View 1 (tube, one colour):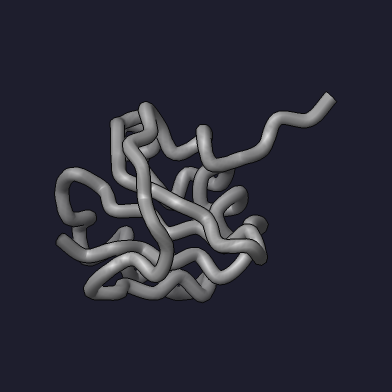
View 2: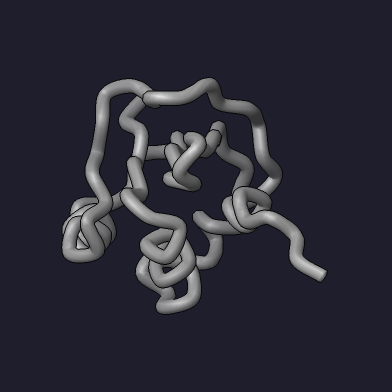
Length: 85
């Protein structure tokens, strides 16, 4: 299954808040992980449609064959953001 690589935490934040990633996809469980620089790797349960992948590419998001970090199950993509006080 293809993995989405978000080159910066802001790329993921913008993809979610702008609606580039459909809400039903962002709220769905996935396999995901972050590297020490905070870059996210997300493997959605279903491949994204071509239009969404093309829009994400404009934010620098890349489709990779495998994650570059260990992943874990998350209930939604927002779980990748650290909690702040």
